[in-house]
Image 1 (cartoon, rainbow, N blue to C red):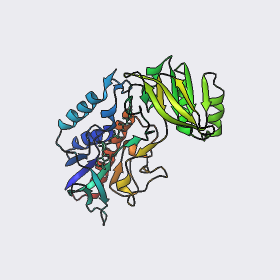
Image 2: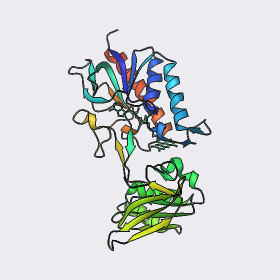
Image 3: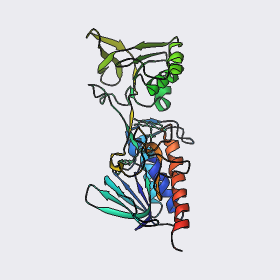
Image 4: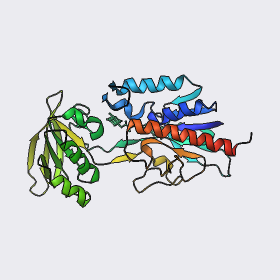
Amino acid sequence: AFDVLIVGGGPAGASAAIYAARKGIRTGLVAERFGGQVLDTLAIENFISVLETEGPVLAAALESHVRQYEVDVMNLQRASQLIPASVAGGLNEVRFESGASLKAKTVILATGARWREMNVPGEKEYRSKGVAYCPHCDGPLFKGKRVAVIGGGNSGVEAAIDLAGVVAHVTLLTNSVLKADAVLQRKLLSLHNVTVITYAQISEVKGDGNKVNGLVYKDRNSSEYHSLELEGVFVQIGLIPNTDWLKGTVELSTHGEVVIDERGQTSLPGILAAGDVTTVPYKQIVIAVGEGAKAALTAFDHLIRTSAP
Ligand code: FAD
C-alpha cells in the first residue's frame, strides 16, 4: 500500500507528488491524462518565474520533475470509486475503470475541473484561436480588440468587467437575463465600452480558418439571427469539477466541488484534496501548484500522527 496516493496528474497532483516523495514516503500518482488542463492550453504567461511557455511544454516539465523522484506514476487510469477506510488509521481504496484497485493510508484528490462548453459549430475549431475560457489567463492577449463574453451569471459579468479594462469593447450575451449579483450588474452597466444582449442563444462561432472573426446568435424573443464582428469569445457558462466518482463519499459543495479546509483536508480523515476540484477560489495553475504542496504536507502530518513508528 502507498503512504500517499494522488489521483490526478495536473499541476496540483504533480506538485503534491513531489512534496510527498521528498519526505521519503511511498508515493503513487494515478492520472487519466498526465498534464490535465495544461495540455489544452497554448500560451501560459502567468506561471510566476516562467515568462512565457506553452501548455504541452509545461505539462512535460511537470512530468519530468515528478519522475526525478521515486513516484510510482500510473497514467491512463480513470478512477471510478473511493472507498474510505472503515476504521481510523485503516487503508483507503481507490478503484479504477480498468478493474484495478489501489490502497493507501492517505489519498489526495486532484482530479481538476473542465469548462462547460456551448457546443456550437466553431467553438472547438477556434479553441485557443479566439475562443477562450479564462479571462485571467487570456485577457491580455485581446488587448485593444473586440470580444464577447457568453454567460450572465457572476463569472460572466466579472469576466466582462475585467476584460473591459483591457480590450476595446465587450459584448456580454446571455440566454435569458443577467443573473449576477446586483452590485456586479451595476458596475457592468456603468462601463462605457460594454454592451449587454439578453435572450441571446449563440448559434455559431465564425472564423477565417485561422482565427475567430465573429459570432452568430438568435434573438430568443424574435427568433431572428444576428451577427457580431469580433476577435474573441470568452465562454463563462460554468466550471464542472471532476467529482462524479466521489459522490456519496467526501462532502461536496452545491457546485460539486470537494469541500476543504485551509490545510486541504476533506470531510474524511486522511483524504485530502487540491486544485480546481476543490472549493478553493480562482482556478489557476500557480494556485493549484501551491494547493498540491499544501495537501501533501498535510498528508505527511496525518501519517506521522496516525501511523505506527
Ligand atoms: P487539472 O489540470 O484539471 O488536472 C486534473 C488531472 O486529474 C488530470 O491529470 C486528469 O486527467 C485527472 N483526472 C480527472 N478525472 C480523473 C479520474 N476520474 N481518474 C483519474 N484521473 C482523473 N491557468 C493559468 O494559471 N494560466 C493559464 O494561462 C491558463 N490557461 C488555461 C487555458 C485553458 C484552455 C484551460 C482549460 C485552463 C487554463 N488555466 C490556466 C487553468 C489551469 O489549467 C487549471 O487551473 C489547472 O490546470 C488546475 O490544475 P489541477 O491539477 O487542479 O487540475
